[in-house]
Amino acid sequence: MKKKTISEVDPSSLRGRTVVVRADLNVPLDGARITDDQRIRASLPTIRLLAEAGARVVLLSHLGRPKGEKRPEFSLVPVARRLDELLDPPVHFAPDVDGESARAPVEALEDGTVLLLENTRFLPGETENDPELAASWASLGDLFVNDAFGAAHRAHASTAGLADAMTARGREAVAGELMARELRFLEEALRMPERPFVAIIGGAKVSSKIDVISALLPRVDRLLIGGAMANTFFRALGLEIGASLVEEDAVDTAARVIEEGGQSLVLPVDCVVAPELSVDAPTRCVARTEVGDEDRILDIGPETVELYGGMIRRARTIVWNGPMGVFEVEPFAHGTTAVARAVADACGDGALGVLGGGDSAAAAEQAGVVERLTHVSTGGGASLELLAGALLPGVEALTNGVG
Ligand code: ADP
Ligand code: MG
Image (cartoon, rainbow, N blue to C red; front, side):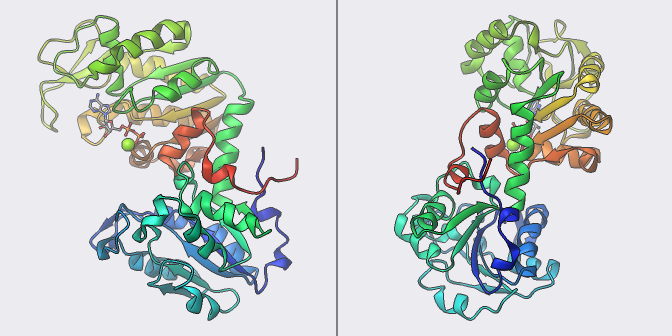
């Protein structure tokens, strides 16, 4: 069911209204310094739209895992400061979290201004999805906008709980601009993919992505495997993988996927190996059948890059999650960079290319291709769950749209 979005709300109805917005402002911090403000920037369109329409914007977000306690190292103060730098309308900050304590600063808000409340996870009720806490936030305004795609796979008080509480008051809960964009691209890729449809799944573990692999396999033309998880598939084929990372517990699962996947499942044919994971380790490119017992597989090899690159460039729909190797260490970044470029090239030729996953997004950044991809998802876990066919509680609780 398509959900109502903020762009479907009449802007003239927003003037003077208090709108409660759940954003995903969960940025990485080094002390009080924000090391990457991507998530803050991604949240700006919704905030701007509301402020320009004259709404009074009450912003909620979590940051890190303070585990229900007020811990100053997880304060949103640095985020408030950064928001104030990025936005024209003034951004105020309230050290209060729950709706009751925040009532006074909310009532003092002027039209077209923004108030950020302190970290929602300072209260244990947030992750417990406490209905009273959700109701206290809902009582602050008369419209809820959920823009926190990255937190949509969890039913927390400020996500699904708040949407339920707002609709229980007879008011609407709608998707923000970022949320709508995430849903549009991820759902478009899945619903009516133009073919060939190629999925690329890499990263550390088979176990964390087995649901996505199983869900995508019957839908795609090709599913290309890379990263450390390929080792577990190699093991299932009875190949020697030396000292490489492997998940012994997932070998049976990998064997089952190989059998079910048939021609659609594609594994690396060669790999880059080294005796240890370091920048100056001596590296070799070997066929997957030639891995020695002291070798560690740390990237896909040049023949695999060729093979995958060709399949990706011919694709019309691409879903990518997970790096092909240890891209953080230069000698093992090549496979991931090459795949990133192939996806970007395909997008340049009109393919729909969607990337999900925190590390993958960092890899795309490092490869300098982010601008050329159709969409880079801001939600790692949420995008994986959506691709695996799960319903996201933070989305399901929103008001249905028309059509
Ligand atoms: P994402 O965050 O994009 O979903 P993951 O978290 O699943 O990706 O995996 C990313 C991690 O996998 C990276 O830190 C990368 O170094 C690691 N990785 C990829 N290939 C290998 C490999 N061959 N050996 C060890 N680690 C690997
Ligand atoms: Mg990761």
